[in-house]
Image (cartoon, rainbow, N blue to C red; front, side, top):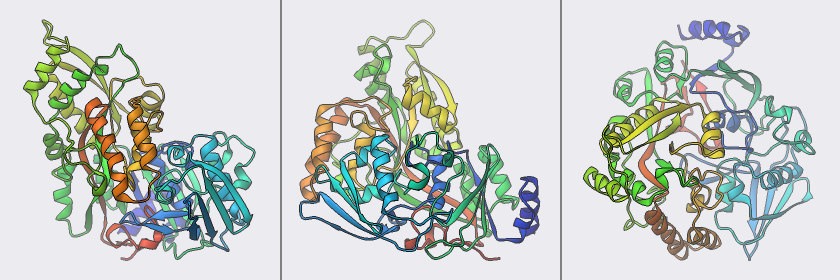
Length: 510
């Protein structure tokens, strides 16, 4: 039955019905990527594809430990400023070109010169050398303890120098038809409908074991869930509403895996425009006191995860100062603080209004609704704005055309990640926040390898964040994966050597 449904679904997508005779993994997916340049800008929607089209020098496994990919080994100099990477031999780009150290050099140089998504984590690179085709030497301006973990994280996919060198990486045709070294090759993208990848027969690693992957774009979570239950998809990446999880967990044909993560939900304040009420510290504190985080965990997240108590993720316990906490839920205090700030209620019961911007998706929509209701109780009118990711990025991150915005994201594998989110000019600093003490401690803390010696720097950062409240931590994220029981090699049984997000080891066993 499942094979027949897949056959019909692929035919409706306009994909050759020959694909139905192959092993095709169909994924109900929540939205289109921006493009397929994996390093230029933050693109969470594109990560699932690019992690299978491209590879990194090093990657993370499901436990967030660093594992080799295109680099098989590396050495670090005694002053911790020179990294020598020994590259994997026999690797081919999808167009047949041989992978060499020139690709590594182009990629790292381009990320720095173009201020790509990983710029904050790689800006300390001084020079990349290629002593031979299978060796890349990276020289840093200063010691940088989290350099290897950040190479394994985000925006660091190795790109083909022979296609990008000498071009503007924002306009390169390969952004629409990517060429990588990963387990799957790009086939087509029909925007708003589907993205198809096919097996790379020349892949350097083990696998892949399915012939094709089809990401079926279904933005509405209820529609995606129904398609999944109807047998039209094998994996539901469009996370269902948390009310559906208990039902799914009782379904013998469905696997539900819940995993903790270093990712967090938070609400950021636009600090770039002093005409906005949220630039007033008492207003920010009042809004923090007005938001019922426990209600978000219970009503929106279905009890999964925990409330956002601290100013860094508890998933990296050595770096967190548990004595520094965010304001507790206290609507009466919120009312008092707003009065003190000079924003008294008018005859209509409102003090002022704000625009709250967030991504499409059930959890974002439900979370925004809780916040709107919470703030209404203290006289703040909230206008909701739901956007697909590219528009959200333009409005929030680039134009700062908002008052408050919802965001989450991976904040590991090292606390130096905070540089991106709260450092001056950080690539994900949606607030426009700037604090010299924060910048100093983030810079100095990243130079030291010894964890005990690093702690005071990150504790100092958290103290400043608690004082300034550029954002309010809402909840800790639990990753929830939903797939059919016949799909193997995913999540809980994901082989470590495959790399986080890879489908190379996935098998379909009926």
